Image (cartoon, rainbow, N blue to C red):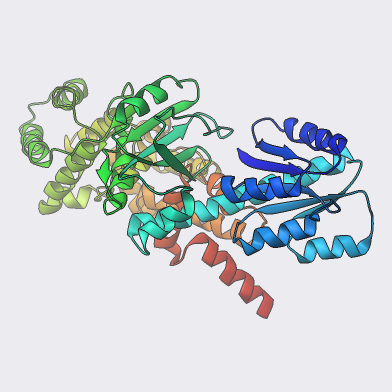
Length: 482
């Protein structure tokens, strides 16, 4: 929800603009409407609104002067100028000062709505770009962390920091008022995808209890969330961001753990369990998938383990199979993963268990029908649906191909693993959209099948050598030269 200030010396004009804003649901929130430009400037200085609707001719201060004084204060605010005069010199001056649009009184609601849609899209694009940039800088500690936080917090910082990562059920979410915290608290939000938002909380005490209660009371809009521990100072911000995101994915292990606070993974315990698991499989002690899956599920439940431990289990199994040349040659799709890649590869712990069992139990292939024909059908399906959530286990079942054999066919036919094939299709489509469309980076992310803007940015950079925004700029510069 973007915060709006309206200033016009004619009260009836304020009413018209207010009605326009209110017609757009939760996209905009009016934080001030006034007939006094000086009052508007005061609010701009203190409340950091996203956009200001200003009359161009007002006593004491014109709309142009308000824009100039706002820029002098280095406030990043978009302006829409409203005027009763269709004078080209006014329009020209407003646009030269950086106004996003110029509307005539009385407002033509259809044209004004088009302007508002355009404004919302611009604000969304600007926010996603700025938020991602700040998130990466804080996560990778590229620049002075305190400077970034000072630019986002309005008041002198308190001593403690905490991070909450929230995934919403709908892309039309409103993060304002989600967390009900104590009075000595300030927070800033980073939007990292169509349904993902990160809250950085600055306070004088640990807010875990209040955060948990706030999130559990919003089950109608919150899909899942992760809460970091709290820490003094800014030195641990990167760690808080990482652990909060890890905790938000603990529902991978148990769907009932929709809201989870981070606890450190138990690598040594998982390593011992993995060794016993592999040994039992080799001795054919697990007679069926149900026993195998139940054993892992019980282990995770008893020891209160999360997705970080699931990653450790998977990577221990990968390490074991890589030592065995015979196993390694068969395990075409066994590769080390981090927790974000784990979520892309498997829907949940149960699916991971099924996959491991089928790969390591050395069952004879039992193909139903012509495997090559079925595999071609599978590839055609992926080519049309790569932007959706796809899992190899589901597809192999759908096309009656043993999952182990399916992995071999991917390597043989495409020279890629299943995961690599999906990523390749998504990257090619992303490149096409970045070069040939006006979609924002966030919209491209969504179109090619990623719900997490940060993860899309990470995957694109790994595969294409630069971030999506830099790639688009470089492509535009190249086209200009041609």
